[in-house]
Image 1 (cartoon, rainbow, N blue to C red):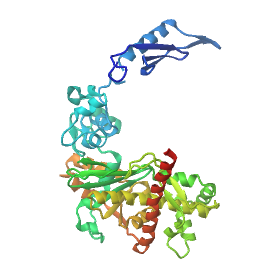
Image 2 (tube, helix red, strand yellow):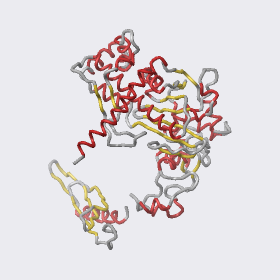
Image 3 (cartoon, rainbow, N blue to C red):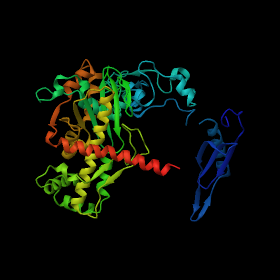
Length: 464
């Protein structure tokens, strides 16, 4: 082993600890850094109550085993390293081929150039280059491609399906959601995107966190937005993937942490409603004559309680709330919930603006995932972005997207695009309330000021 920098290789030492339940060993360098670790349980006997025995032979055997394991690590023994979707397709088919989606989006693979030797050498994993990258994938297939001979007899038995059924090269879950919504046939709904290419559509998969999937014919580099990735979602198109680290999780956090949450739970349960259906109804009761969104005129939220993924790509950012009062009643909780939903929608607007500025031309949002079931969340996204929102007939768009891949692998469709158009069905369309645009433009100005101020505060505290 190297002891650091450009120094000569240093000596390493083995430390062994025999405990009551196991033998542990570590390989330690001259700086005291543990380079490898191994553990092996040892046997215990209790021949009668409160009498304990152990075997010295067993302890010695365990010492030998852990020492050997230090020399051959969970790394040297590994035959393959899989991303989860590729592991599952391997279990189903026995085929070690990888999905282009997994490798391009998460493993630095280039659809055009393949693996980059220099990257693996730079990070000290150049052993993966050996045998033509066999451990991490040297057969890379577009999503929807049929794998091998389909389900193996063993997998078929475990799944309760006939062997030989076609299995498709996979997609990451959010990408499957995008595939399940973005290609829907929108004719007859009065949408501007009807006469536009599919590149005018932005799929937003919104659950615990959110992903924003936009595609283009040519590669577009968007600061703070992942990609472009070729053929990673829709074959033949470049994918850009924006995201918000916490969305559904943030709404839960704000609501459940409020003093009035127990009262909300009790009242929602009494009405056999979800807490969010109850909150949406409560907002309608307290809004009086004004639009519901106007209840947050004095309350503003910056939603990066877990850092900003897009478009600022700044994990140091924190959440902010301005406009708090001494009130802790149910009205106060409902309005804080509304301000949080609006903040998430303003975050989506900032991602859209970054994508538009870089060269995307977007006109319509296609929402799926758990939060798309919340009508307030959907309406706020329409009002704040100024774009119509298309909801799928099937809420479980990730599953529909995965089924689209299977349909392609089966040969029932000639292309992913054909399967998308046939299998993605429009459910409901929510249009923005244009009369509220001026209000949300003002709120958005405040939204952008908040992060500007946060950075000013940070500069003050970190300055000399």
